[in-house]
Image (cartoon, rainbow, N blue to C red; front, side, top):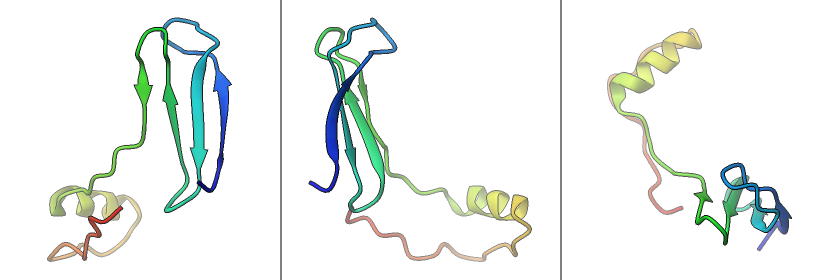
Length: 75
């Protein structure tokens, strides 16, 4: 692991036993798990479809794409 763990306060039930894990590889992310109410917060990895990606690129004043770039599924 390339990060650390700590405890924090659960936003659902207020428990001060929520486990918080921070990791930096393969990318920065944080995960939370509450043993009292079962809340789990974790990063979801997904890609936009071509239309959604081009809408985002338009907001960034970028040229639209005609096909999706390569998408790594091996995280």
